Each structure stands twice: as structure tokens, then as C-alpha cells.
Length: 227
Image (cartoon, one colour):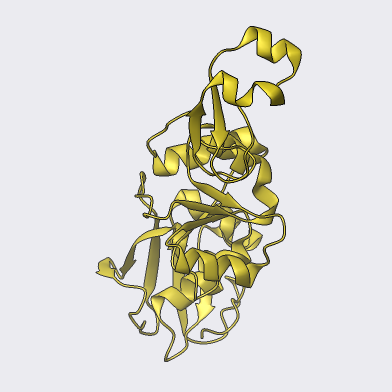
């Protein structure tokens, strides 16, 4: 692993210079954001991926890498004095077969995604190791605003959710992945698919006003809620 990042004016020996796409600048330390680049002490076995993540930028947010102007991979080792540039991940990104998984802080976003028919798994009780395991085993992309979670090596796919509030976060997710939408086809409580049911089948469960006003209903296949 690379050593700790040094101040741009005090690199402490041979260095690697990291620059990033403008969209990634907010992820760098404040001093590096102002300078537009970050100098880190060169380590013989450090790879491009290590340097980027040590700077606080998860590889989930990184697109193309370049070393001294030539394409590079996260596994490439860096020579002393290398100029490493990290581009931003291209949009739209494909959604894996398993769909989305959201961390415990994104419950409001999960409900909005489910309203649009997206497979958005969420639990109020999942801790970070549980989320990583579930993302891997269920082939899901993990959505989180926690950079530390995205820096975990065992996480196969992830995305940093940007925006203040669920509406802005939803706009960011839809722009990043542009998934196919199917509104009102999933339960907002548990995310399972809805199936159409006859009014007579659920009439006893409906408030009187709803029973008089509406004729088309669905029931969640998992938790039984009626919509």
C-alpha cells in the first residue's frame, strides 16, 4: 500500500503526482483540491489503484487511468516521478442482473426507486460487511454516500450517491445508470413485485372511501400489502 499523502509543497522524497477529473476533485483532501493535484510519496510496490484509493477516491468512481499520458490499469505499478491521472466513470453504467442495493442511510431513496419499479434492496439493520456480502452474492451494485464503504476491496460493484436529499439522490442515480423504469410495479415497503388482484379479493381490507373510489388493485407477492 502507498504511504500517507504528503502536502504538495512537502512531498518527502520521490513522488507520484495524482490529478483527477474535475468531478472527482471534491473527493480529494482540501489542500489538494486547491492545488489541483496531490503529491504522494513513491512506494516501490504501490499500484495506480492503491494511489487513487489512498487519496480518498474509490475506484468505483474512476474511469480511465493514465500514467505519463499512456493508458494504465489499476494494477500497474508506478515509477518514481510518474504523473497519474484518474478520469471519471462513464455514464450511463449498466445495472447488474441483481439490481441495486442501498445502505442503511438511503431508505427514502430506496422507496422512491421502488415507486419507479426498480429492484432496490434495502434493510435498516444491515451493517457494512453484510452489504458487501449481499452485493457480491446477489450481483447487485451497492449505492452509498459512504466513501469508506466503497473503498472495501471485497466490494464488486458500487456507486457514490451524490445530492442532498432523496430527490437529488434519485436524479443522480437515474442519470448514472439510466435504468428501464416500470412505475407502480413494486412494493414500496419491501421491494417485491406487485400482482393485480380483483377488487372483490381485497374489498374487506380496504377503507370505505378507497372501496368506493377505486376499482384496480395490486397486492405485494411477498408482504401482502394492497395498493
